Image 1 (cartoon, rainbow, N blue to C red):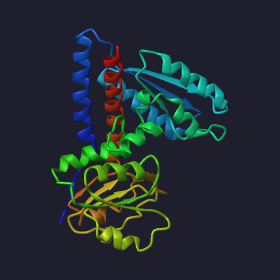
Image 2: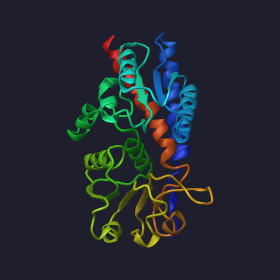
Image 3: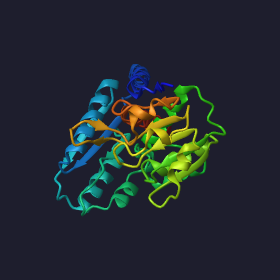
Image 4: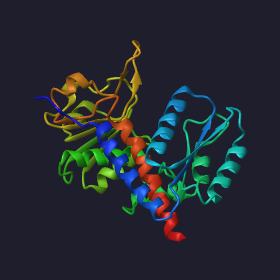
Length: 286
């Protein structure tokens, strides 16, 4: 068996075109374009790449994009004061603070300072709580992007057994909530999980978000299963790879995402989708 490739790059491109068309409709009707403010603290190389990609995507769809760079030694209170200012600016619909942050800044405090209606990352406890209650508003970008990809398979999700490897607040936990909302049966695995390979072998859907290069082996995958690889790692030879042994797994799986070109582009496209949704929320209030 050779797996179908879930091309996140192509799906994301289609989503960006849809967003671009809606922005043109908004501006033609005399409304302002959605606005996204991105705060980058320090000079983490990976964060700088992510931010550049986000800015490029914003420009492509016609958003107002504002990048605010802060020094690595910026005090926490200065960042919180900046967020307070952005919360009040009417032309800013979404606020994104690029993670990770320097040690002197508490990420949870920063996330909670952003207005829930401007929390386009979907990390605020209010937005996570709404997801728990099956009343989603702004949803975490990567899990929401994965759900869009799963929709493109045409697969009926209800009743499927799904295994998520990783329990982070950014991917693992909200991913479980998304799949549970789709009526899947969920198993969340982590470093203390026993008989991990047996659990993966019984899964119809495998979501790998563990942060270890090619951790999931091909013979762990049930024939025909859907494999979503959220990981992105750099090997000793400089090449990028995911958390799944793609070559081996693609011989067994029914659907599989590549790395790069899979979940990554969907995360950025979903950020744009969330920003457009936030703009609609703000326009409805005016």
